[in-house]
Length: 121
Image 1 (cartoon, rainbow, N blue to C red):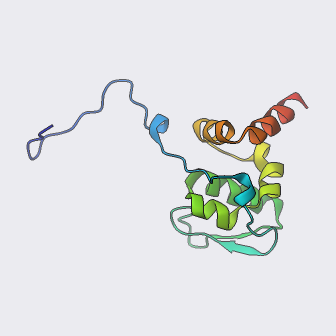
Image 2: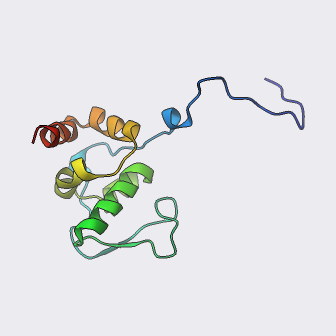
C-alpha cells in the first residue's frame, strides 16, 4: 500500500486499540522465581514514575508491581520480577485490562481457576 506524503492513514471503523495490544507471557509459571521480599526496581516500560521501586513485602505495593509487570512487562521481566506463589495469591486482586487477564488465564488455567474461586467466594 502506497501512502502519499502528508496523507492521513485511517483506522477501520470498529477498530479498538485495546483489542490489539500484544501481552507477553512467560513460557511457564514455574519459571517465575522473582523476589518475595526486598525492593524491586523496574524499567520505564513498566513504570514511568520518578521512583519506580516497589517494596514486595508491602501488600499494596506488591499488587501494584505485579499488575504493572503482568500488563507491561516482557517475558524476561516476568521471570526476573514475578514469583509463582505470590502471583497465584495476588492474581484475583490484580488490576488488569480484561483482555490481558484473558490472555494470561488462557495460557495458564491455574490462574483462571484462582479467578473463578474468588468469584464464588
